[in-house]
Image (cartoon, rainbow, N blue to C red; front, top):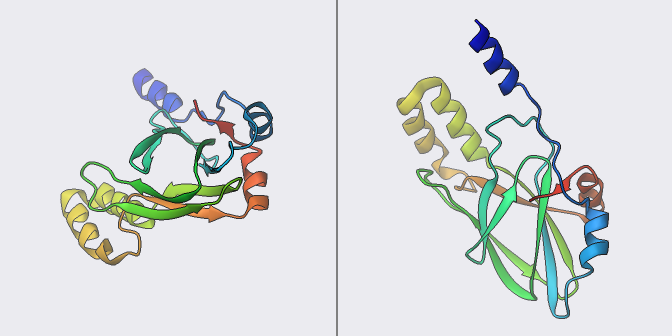
Length: 170
């Protein structure tokens, strides 16, 4: 009984508080992107986080972007031009790909979420095991995004409102 109570307490802990700079402090500290570069800011909403709050794994032009946990944001500066955001997971039957065109001096904001396909597969396999996993993988194969994450563009005003509650990922 004691072990069950301790497990319930640990799983129910909300850990969305993150250390790090808020966006205004970060932009003051690092300044704008250097000449010929733009900035991409990726946000992950505040939500219920538990002990297993894993960072989303994705890449920009093949370079891993790390640390995007619940209630955080990350940013990268890249040269102006075409770039590619991708996300894949071992054992997941698809890849997320999003082309991003960056202009010099520009900042683009993206909300990063678990894709509808991954949500559907997780929900189905949690309830019905391997059979549910196989069926939901087949049923969701026609989804627009076959990968595990969505990269949703945000207007600057909405992004700045949302980011005010987030912290820079460590």
